[in-house]
Every structure is written in C-alpha cells, then in structure tokens.
Length: 206
Image 1 (cartoon, rainbow, N blue to C red):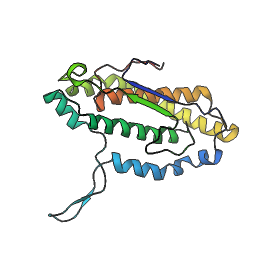
Image 2: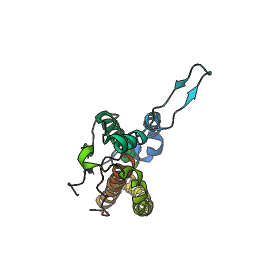
Image 3: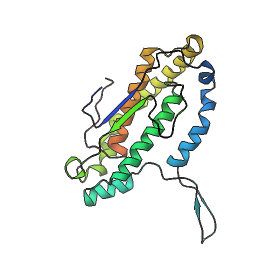
C-alpha cells in the first residue's frame, strides 16, 4: 500500500470463522444501517406549506462548497473536511459489511476493522486554485478502470458468499482483491469528489 498517498485504506482480514447465518441474510441485514446512511448521505426531502419546510435528510458529501472556497479563498474549512472524512468512513463500514469483509454490524462512529485515514490539506500550498474545476474530467480514466474492477469485485463477493456458507472463511485472495478495489475507489473519491488532494490517484492494485 502506498503510504505516501493522502488517503490510506485497509481492512483487517477476519482470520476466523465468519457468521454463516449473517452472511446468508446479509442483503437483508444491511437494510437498517443502509437507511441510516441514506439519511446523512442522500438527497434532501421536504414537506410543508410555503411558509414552513421540514428536512428529513442531510446533504451528503460536501463538494460544491469546498470547490468554491478553494477556488476563491484557497481554504478548506476543517469542519467540512471532518464531515467528509467521517461520512466516507461510515459509508465504507457499511460497504465492507455488505461485501462480507466483516460480519460485525457497521458502527456509525467506531473504527471497527476499517482503517481509513485522510490527510487534512493545507489549501494554500497543497491545493491548486483551479484544480477542482477539472478533477472530475482528469479522473475519467479511473472511472473506466473502476467500472471493470467493480464487475470483478461483484463476482469475487458472490464466490466469497458461497465460500463462507460452506467453509466459514473468506478466501484471502478474494478478500485482498475486494479490499484493494475499495482503496482505489476511495482514492478517486478523495481526488475528484471531496477534493482533499491534488495528487493523482495511482493506477495500482498494490
């Protein structure tokens, strides 16, 4: 793993028998926590009259506001960074549970088996003023590669599902592949979506 990249990501391998019942019903077991995740990462919902409106959801990742602050003020407010980092961690805990990498129910705040760190950028020196306007475009090669990696990860998870049901274990090679796809995915998010680094994500499964 490239420890020099501003985002590092790893998942502890469960060197033990995994819960087969939980694995069998994983697609249903994840629903409650997925709803919780949706309330903080989904689109806003409103109801009410012209004079009063209530909101049921938060706004998800902060993208537009950091873009404007970097572009015009060369700043990335720390609390915006903290929100994006913690939401990224939470969404990944749900993701690794769904991908069977862990049978511990996802926590909204505890680290558990996921280790995801993001360096807080010095916007004055580390972030180019105009880069947020073009990162989404520069990352297009990654989108293409990730499309095929997602397909491979899907089949790896299906094979792992059967392996866990029959043996209780997640094959190490499949686990490692799904994990590194997750790392690649998160580094592209850090670069093109939450804008915390101008360092181009590596094309590597290492």
